[in-house]
Image 1 (tube, rainbow, N blue to C red):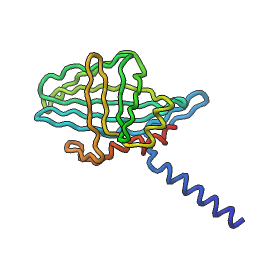
Image 2: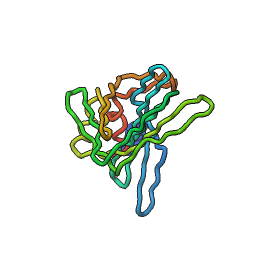
Image 3: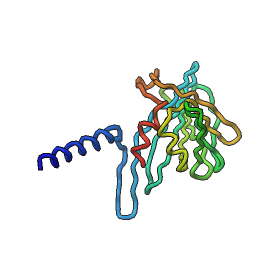
Image 4: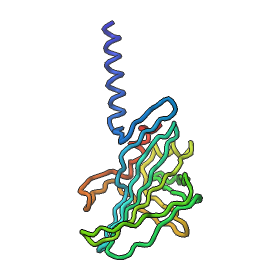
Length: 189
């Protein structure tokens, strides 16, 4: 009995240790649906003069299907051109082990929305999109850090170099974007 209680305690600690990073924004389960979403994490920040460009990743599991949520936030005093994604858009990820992973855009065409901040007199564009993993690339992402992310927009693509440690000037946060999938994919399996 003593050994059984010790084993049970050890298993409980092990499960809790594995899920300590799995802090969900939403965790809903009904008879017919299941949804878990993790908070978005800053993956890239580019500040040049009055222009700011941020890329955030979030993970979710919708009825057993893991999905990557992408948010691009752009801020400028000047006009910001629209970015759009089509059904054929992709995210291409280069891992530090040299492998290339491709994620497929999940829905129909989507374009960034334009907002205006009257206090700062600046334009803000927000693009939110969702991408599917494949079984093969899901496993690869759990085993190697990221070095580069290429977003294939409609008619153009943009590369983002992913840092091992990112200290945000604007958000005053510290993240480890290169290890994003290694740390958080387990939360949406």
